Image (cartoon, rainbow, N blue to C red; front, side):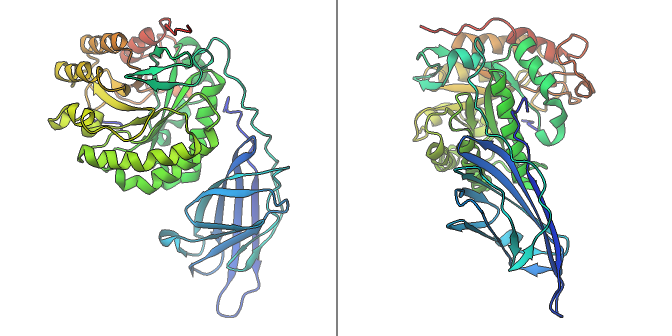
Length: 462
């Protein structure tokens, strides 16, 4: 299947440091470091560190700095081997970024804790060579982590949990969340801004905003710190509007989620630590596993879930299923493989995806059976064919939505974007403007979904 900051966005602090040091005769040496605090919250923060080699090519490097305060501690780092002794931090290359050619750069990142004022590092060294210069930027203010707005989906339901086969709210009552999914952030980032999120929350009355962060195809693997920061920004934008945010680790090709196991552990350790105190975050750990067995997917899940739980013990986690998250139906199997061999973890749900013009009665029958045994969430579906294109199948889409409503299964529609394809909610070019709700900008699919999502929710509170 194709899947192809009202952020109280903390001000980035950029430290641009450039120096050319008088070299020994054999080599020219020099370095530049950009240190950016991408997010900060009470007692914790996330930072990106980009080191650029301005001298001759080097093979093997270590970046060091010392915090002047002594109250900071690295808790999780990526793209390097991290260590800390007192206030001194050291980061050494890993195999794949060992060589830095002239002008080459390594993008590093970490999450940390702090006490006091969290001052910036005063100096860096690369292989013992000082990188010094003028310090710029501002200290970002702490994230006030406000309560969700009264009367919003998060304001009413609070921290979610899985109870039996249902998603339940803070009153232990089953609820259904209805919302929209982004397209790939690397392609349609301009579609996700204050105007579009305001429209989604206020005009569409959406309960849920799914953040589809591709891992390959120009996504996370190309800029881990940047994509992590963008996801966190969108998490905060959803929070400010009282919507739930589903963080989707959008794997598709290759289909074996274990290909991205290390990336998943790094990413989820970071976002779970940063968002652990928030009530509105749901984690989807593998979008559409394909070409692999359920046992392989289960093994992946049982390695990633503990990473999230170590930081965030309460959040709901959603596990992808075989055959592009079809419960195995698209591979000629069915839901019994999951029922008979469930993931060894609590407070989890299982993903189901469908495209209404391609997946009809056989798929609906599987969901109807599975819903009696498994907690399901339709984390992605389209009104068109599995390619993401073609005409809207209104009859099948309506049959699906009626079934999900009846079974209280939550859903996110693909896609809240102006992609030039039938599944897009907006006509091409919409994201260049500020209107995300009127009939003039909605496609047939967008109009259908808006009419379904904007009907009143039934959230029980007693």
